[in-house]
Amino acid sequence: MKTRLWILTLLVCMAVWALAACSSQAPAAKNQTVERSAEQPPAAPQPATAASATAPDAQAATGELRNVDLVAKTLTIKDAAGTEQTFSFTDSTEVAGASGSQGLSNQQGNQVIVHYLEQDRHTAVRIEMVPK
Image (cartoon, rainbow, N blue to C red; front, side):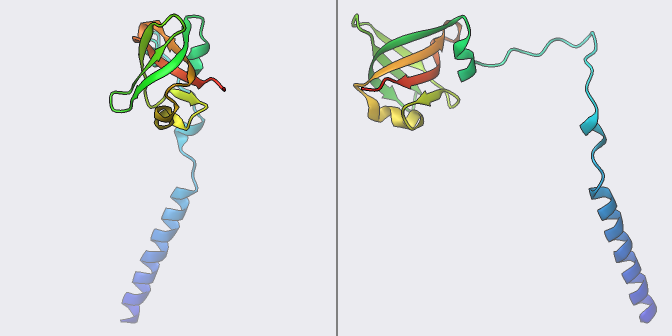
């Protein structure tokens, strides 16, 4: 009985020691850099983000917020000339001056500036509430 207890204790100690040794080692790939070969294609372009709203091809539209559809993720504004424009937005669209896209529905009738990229089918990258 005592011999079995000693063997079991020895096995448990060896297992704990092995696990402790493995967990203290840093992964080998962590400090290595990945070199791209000549055959690898360049990375695909990233989707539009709030940071890309400052890109040279970014456009802005200003107007009164007329409608917000949170299910379809669209908003409609009416500019000073009376023209209505509809924009879509995503979960990554930055909203300034309201508590996210949920807060936009409470802002109907207020002035907004919508920053968007034309090639993204009027997808807003940033929506700013204009202070009264």
